Image (cartoon, rainbow over all chains, first blue to last red; front, side):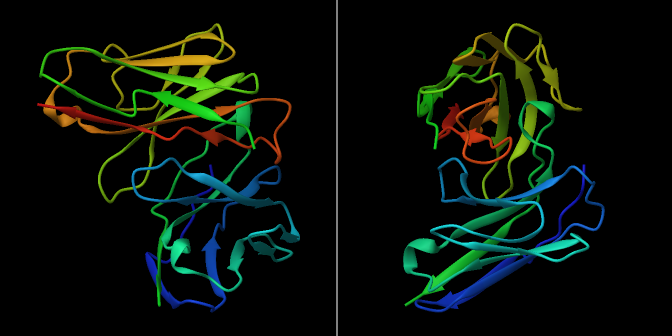
Length: 111
Length: 119
């Protein structure tokens, strides 16, 4: 399973755009890239998933370059409630495999 | 997205007792369920993977006789911590994955977690 590397922490202010980059140099051909958000004492919550190029949903965008060795989660105009730990996971997932969580990025949004 | 519940949300028990944690997929059939453990300020650690009707596959270093996993139906998996000790105190989280009704490819849906405290 591909190992991921993310910044340990990031600080931002309300209303700013936040970009969190994840490195996954050993990503396999059939691996997907998935980002989860976790608040203290809660289970992780799915944010977005992609395979290549750009994916956008109502809460975030995911940018994946052509070589797929990294990905960037973009959170537009963050608010205080976006303070959480964000995990980047790479894998086939689902019933065919498991998701290995790295250390994640603790995002702190300040007023 | 699909909903996964866990019960109980928190439990306190005495050392030496056994504790059972239930994980249910409420609105989809989970062919595979996963159990994770998370210590304070640390990431989630996968403990085991279970497919309905078959024995669980445990990660290296996880004692299968201590952490009994049963996945008897497509909507229910249980984790039993046997002869619990204070070092087993942790946040236990399950997740479920199904073949249909998911919004993303092979997405895992996580439960809210169970806080176990062993005195």
